[in-house]
Structures are given as C-alpha cells and as structure tokens.
Length: 123
Length: 110
Image (cartoon, rainbow over all chains, first blue to last red):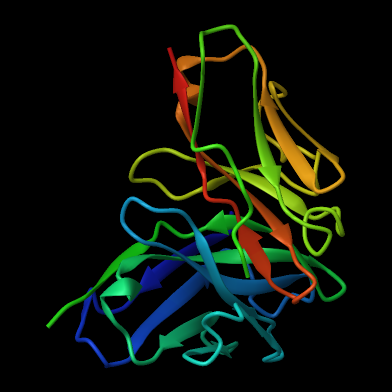
C-alpha cells in the first residue's frame, strides 16, 4: 500500500524559504504512470494546488505561485521536495503531498495523499 | 487561475439525496474529462471519491456518483448517512497544464 509522509520545519520566518520533503513508501517514485505533487490548505480555507513533478524532473506549477516555487525529485531516496521562497503570513497552511495520476502529460487526479504538515510563517 | 465555483454549503436528511455542483469554464471542467471529487473530514487529509468525472475508486460506496454537463460537474450522494458529513472539493485539469480546485462545499446531515 502506497504511503506518503511530509516532513520539514513547522515554523518559517517571513521572507525566508519554506522547505518540505515528501517520502514515498510502498512503491517507486520512478513509475512512468504518475506525477508527484504538493497541495496546500490555509487554516479554515480551501485547497490550492502548488505543483507536481515527474521522476525525470519535468515539472508543472500553479501559475500564481510559479515565480516562488521549486519542486525537485530524488529517485535514489524515493523522495520529492518543495521549496517556496519569500514567504509571508499568507503562506501559512497545511501542506499535503500526493501522487498524481496522469494520462500522457495531463494531470487527472490525486491519490493517495499524505497526512499533511502545518507550516506557520511568523517571526 | 480562478478556483472552480461550488456552493458554500448544502444539507440533507438521512436517506435523502443531495447534489453538489462545480462550475468552471471551457478551459477546465468543460474542456477535459478529468474532474475529480474529494471528501475531507475535519483534521484529516482529503480522500478521493470520484475520478475522471464519474468513476469510483475501489472501496468508495456506490452511493457516490459523478457527472458533467458543459462547464459544470456534479457530485450526487444518495441515501445520505451521518458519516457523509464533511467538506467536499472538486478539481479539474486546466489548459494551463495545471490542476484547479473548487472552493469547497460543507455538507451537513440534518
């Protein structure tokens, strides 16, 4: 059974870079059938897709976050990572990682999801 | 990209059926058959309930069904049960090679 687990600091200072890692277990991140991505949810608000990556390193990003986001993959560790630069209080959210099913290069749906990790942006 | 439009809340009594709508544009919902629906209970991660407009993953009750007409997708839950009370989100692939979510709908079982 595939499982995903987010890890990283729970507190980040304004203007700094948020860094999270997602560790995949129970399956290979190098599968040709999936992308791997990040979604966030501010407290009490809805879901926002951040971006996703293929095992080869090909990426898709949310146009509204693209200038601040970098997603990378480490196939040797079966992990992928998120970096979000120049954070503000508006970036405070629960950050989820998830497997993205695809058809050719089109993203279809997310399943399963990690349990999520709360990142607070505050000095 | 703009979020897909969902009603903020819906409600129904046990045993009844409810429908949640998800409205987008021809660049997302209307342009692709890659609409999915997620259920989220408080403090929990979202769970996939419907994918590719109308397909149910293994293990999801057949009380949940999905459909699409033009730029609007719908999730119908029949035979409402207390455990269905949760937030529901739709999502669609977009012409910008991205995913977009709806704002979420809070389902209350009366």
